[in-house]
Length: 245
Ligand SMILES: O=P(O)(O)OC[C@H]1O[C@@H](O)[C@H](O)[C@@H](O)[C@@H]1O
Image (cartoon, rainbow, N blue to C red; front, side, top):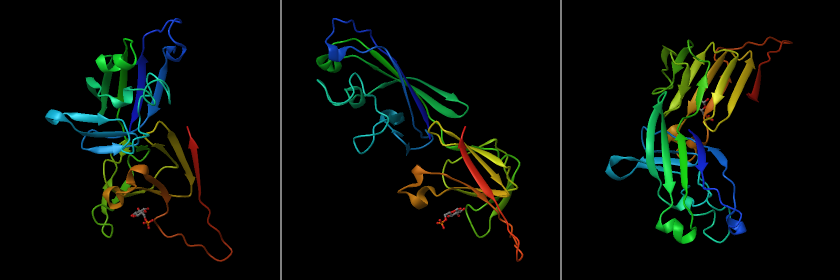
């Protein structure tokens, strides 16, 4: 999943312009996610193969509305296309980078005959998309029972990563997990998952086993894998506290 930030570089429109075209330079940002390693889509972004085997970044939704489109140079209905023309045009890739394993792509849109026919101004819009996924911190060093490929015979291992990601199917038990995990949902939110008494944790993403919905969630579960025996008159309590950090 990904963080997309948009920096607009717009011409200053003087006050003699028609009022519907007057707008200040502004910064605007949205969040979304995906991975460039293979064709994949996340919230608002799809990375696919374009011409010449080059990656093609699609920021519109397959449903027409939604996605991470640019509403430029107009929001909503008005004298030109609904939400402006920028979301309906092909942007050029002007730069690409790899930041700690995450692809960062810079896209550019400039005025041309098509845009000038609707909006007779010079402009340059820059869209920088850093594509990252949901991830979990805090599990390094835990003993793992990996239920992939065989849930009935989990593979015993040890988590070596500081940041655990969900590149595909994930179903793994973490024994003796810490009291706090940090989930980055890939949409710009960092979620602290604190617990008491849940000794273990489970990460799960069904990937293609639930193709219709796996992109909408990852599971970070507190768990107690060993039996808890509660004698008569006794109780056992475990808590989970979720908070945005
Ligand atoms: O389909 P269910 O019963 O809700 O379970 C969903 C998943 O729940 C997770 O907790 C398990 O680790 C997975 O193995 C399981 O598939």
